[in-house]
Length: 330
Ligand SMILES: [Zn+2]
Image 1 (spheres, rainbow, N blue to C red):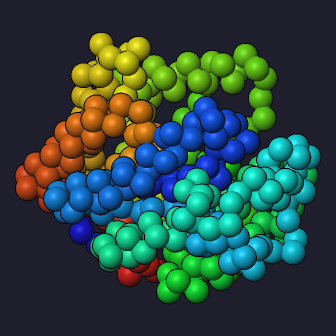
Image 2: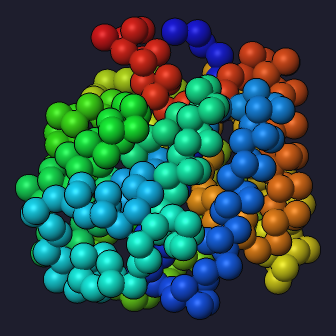
Image 3: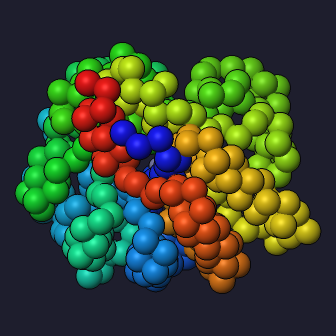
């Protein structure tokens, strides 16, 4: 494969299914509804700059009504020790009958819109926003969940090839289940201690959060770029995240320039050295301060275009990167 650097973008597309155990519709609903404007706007911007992204979508969102959703729900459901983690424990009573009445839980029309952009990839974020490292659930329950995700996607003529683990709970033992469901690549965590998904003390959790925040602004842990030959050794391929695109913060406004520089510099590093830079976020992260967030994204994409001209830095979906690795290293 070409030795040019690669620019990967992945988006966790989940609407309220990814947030329901943490926030209420009343508190966060506005951000979720905003995705109806954000997604088309993002697609336009990606098209303008010839940028491709992987939209890892929660399987529930493929349904356009409750009946369809229930049809695809697996019999074997996750038995999380913490009841609140499972959407099957009462949350279905809170959702309305169809997408027309309920824009928080269905997205069949947005998926149809995504399909109008064949250069973009629709990937998986599991069927139910499944937590692979939570206590109580099992590999068999995960398998049922993934099968349901594949089934509902297939019904919409979508072939799922890439997976983003919800809450970035990568479980190595579950990768064989992913592979047997046609998944060719997943997004692993950044390779530094403060991004590792592990059970840990409260102090360490706070320390990790602090370092992650600091690292968004200054170069604490390097550029988080990597060479394709280093990730091509094991399947499904781990295409680790380089950086979470933090939403614009009014409170930290003064540091926005530093945050931007940090990302652009890492992109340049990847482009110069023929490495991969993988940026990710959720569409609903743009829900507040939309203009500022889009301006920021525009700067990133503009920089990409420059690197593309100068170094042949190439925007690519996870699926296409995995296929290139198949063809080059297999
Ligand atoms: Zn998620």
